[in-house]
Image 1 (tube, rainbow, N blue to C red):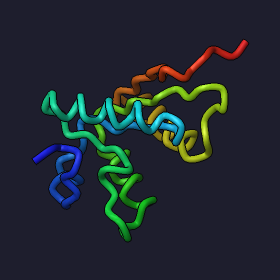
Image 2: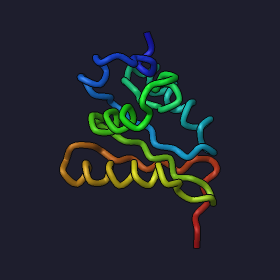
Image 3: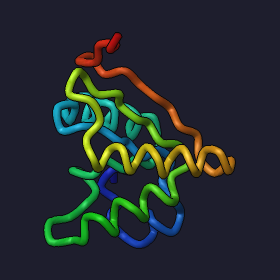
Length: 115
């Protein structure tokens, strides 16, 4: 079974290896990254693959973010961070400062620097 679709309490109890934070415009990049990391043996949380229909999205995402050992933040393109991604990034940074998570920024193929 892929680490991405382990929706049970076991995944939350063990904690995810990687939480992927992304803008909707980067969902294809996020999905590809999730599959690659999962194939490498990591337990990956990606909202669209791990939150079941009817499940409490906010609670599931918050719990996954709280237990992840690393948070990959896909830097969005010109549209900038959305509200949800900003919250995920702030939470990840706070955990990072406490030494509880590694925050890994990744520029998506759509990202361009803003000057």
